[in-house]
Amino acid sequence: MRFTEWEERVAPKLMGAVIAAGDNKDAFNYLIQQGYCTRIIDNLYDQDYPPTNEELMDVSKLLFSVIPSNPFYQEHIKTLQPVASMAWEAWEQSNELCKMTCTDRIYAHVFRDQINYMNELVALLTQGYEKMVEVRKELEHTFSDSWMKSLEGTNVKLEYTPYGDNIQS
Image (cartoon, rainbow, N blue to C red; front, top):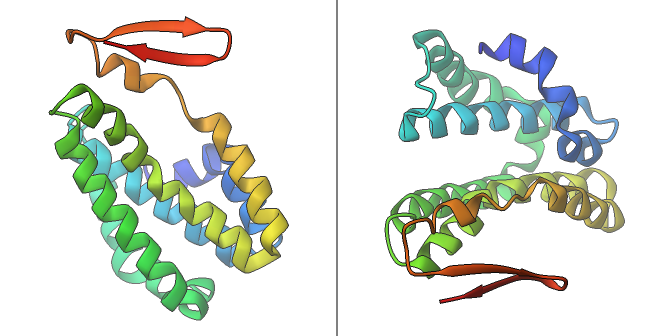
């Protein structure tokens, strides 16, 4: 899906970004542009939904031209860029960990989602600490049990308890 269509159909439903940016349109644009790029690059790496040439061109334009010229990004680059770099490194590491031990596979799912911290950081920068906490709570709903699928075929026995997940091997 091209960025313009994604921006129209998907971005307004990204409540973490909506809440994090508040009334700051540039902050919202930064988050959704980054989110689109992350999704397309992940699809390229995983080859689960191979991106089209047009999607790759959209990512290139966003990363090399649009995001760097975003006023919110320019104002906060010294704060945003280190977190983005750490999230990128965590994502790369998650791609290695998902091929290793059961524990590594679980951590892979934690590491791959560190890009979501950008929403919290944007909320902190645009609206303060309390809004950052609110965004964190909103993002907790986006986590899933998809990590369990990565344990299929291993010797791990998954059991559910009324108090949460209990993993036993």
